[in-house]
Length: 164
Image 1 (cartoon, one colour):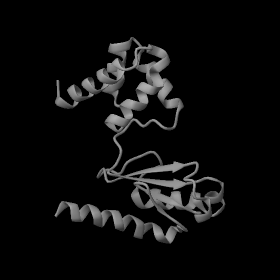
Image 2: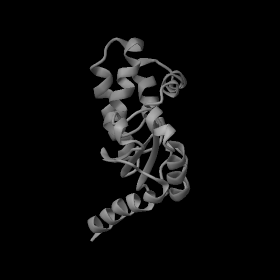
Image 3: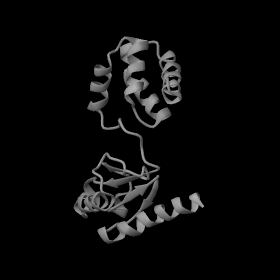
Image 4: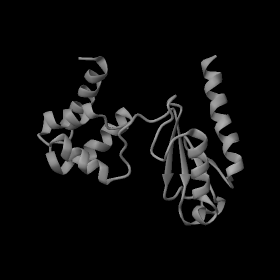
């Protein structure tokens, strides 16, 4: 058994133990597992099945119903492009498309180097600043497609400094 599986098993076991309600606790269990591991892995769903009797396919079915759950490891940096009403009418979809094109990933995916995950969100709560993008919680206001490369450079350069 690889250590990553052992870590997953122990994390899931600890979380499931805190939720003795079984099926009625599935969503909170999935949320806590994702919070701890960063995503819901196949191993985590198998552990839920082993510990609770809730099949992996049922857990997966529940998780895929909700957009909050992800099934791949998140990138080092999470880019959230707002597509709420105020951002949408100010070209939010075009900004999403530009991030997607520049990074070479679709919404919900992570770049091959693991540096960026791209998300489209319903609202970041700062409509007066629309269109907005948040990277790791830092809000960029009045974003245009021309500003996308500069935003990405800020985080690519940051990663380079860390590597030195």
